[in-house]
Image (cartoon, rainbow, N blue to C red; front, side):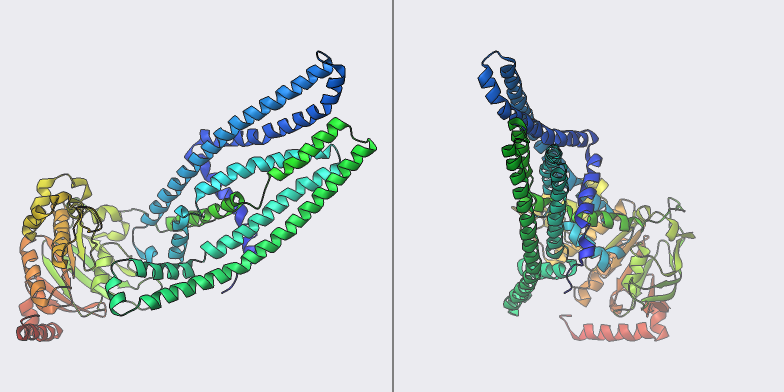
Length: 615
């Protein structure tokens, strides 16, 4: 594994902190202005108290000698009042400053999470969710809420360190009145020390949190061990020991890798602390010597000594400094992800008529290869789907059936050719508007851990309150009695992980998903796509389900995908795909008379079904 290049992280911390700071006005300009004002006050008031205290120490002997009521005594009282006032105002400003920083930090996390979700949802397709570079950025950005990389902590770190930075700068300026070179040395030393330590925190953070590829694998191993879906296989095959050993090895490797940078950070800390102690000793010796020589008066010497001690309120080594660096690190990655995904937006140049499709959907010489692959899954596809008819698309695995559906739904863009609806090219149509005309059920349909009502109405969420429409979608699927038997009916959560929740069998889940597809049709969808949703069923059950569904959706433009030739004979038209092209086209009887691939596969599967009552 290659360690992070020093040049690549040299300015990383500064860029990350600036990225955080630039986002604050987007939350609230008034509160960002308040943050800036209180930062100055929290820095300036303690410095004012320091100067007043130093002057007071120097004024006390003269005031004591002159006695009460003397000008010297009044001056001492004024210095005391100024110091106390600065102390009280400083405490008040500090409380306001910290509370405001905490609220800004929490809202910054919400802002980033909202922008992250919006960025990922922005592209019209799903290709970006399979892109390794985007997934790497997304894994890093997802850490925004984890313990050490929270922007909220970065804001609190900034709130603590920025006033200390200004106070140290002010104290350096005060020391310039003693010796300009001493003051300038401190003015330069603290920023350099702080930047050096932030640099090391950033190196460690990049090592520990931003190694996305390795971390994705570790997290995958962890999730395999603790999630229910793979639990059966892991235990039946005795994989838990292997899984935990691999996870431990990956973490040991990660910790060993991080350890090298922790040792580097320790060496850096020792170096800067040594330089700091040397500078402190030199300054103290000069001050003491100047005081003994009489070159500096007692009052001035007190001010300079208090200013020197102020330097040590500014620390670059504690958790606050670390959280400033670590909490800022993912922010530029989240913004980079947002910028990168903007480019996938496409202009809308055409609009479909309200009733489309009225005539047909056409694939015209369509080519398609998945991103990152040179092997086409669809090549020169020409296919016309007449509106109001049912089309079955069959073919063996890898023939391009599901890819055809993904292209029709706009989840991917054709790499060649075009798809038209009533003559309008879909490439120029708003993808969201087009999808309101589609209802689709895929083989890997999602089992949402939500209520029955949600699971059905997600096909058209804006009609979730229409219970009559829900029952209308449930009736053809024969699941109303099932829903009525559940603890809370339509409001039962379909997950046994929740109180009063329940899980369903595979067949019951399938009918819930089919009801969801029907609900979208009732809400106005013009095209229904069934992409092997019954592949987990046996051949007989799948055939019965398809026949039932084709009866229910008669007159609707329906596209049925299957690799089982013997289950779709009721469709108005059947096309056989092979190598991403249509190789046979016609009704069931026509294709059987043709005696080609469809007839051969249908006969083989039908005979197998006849021989096996359990098929």
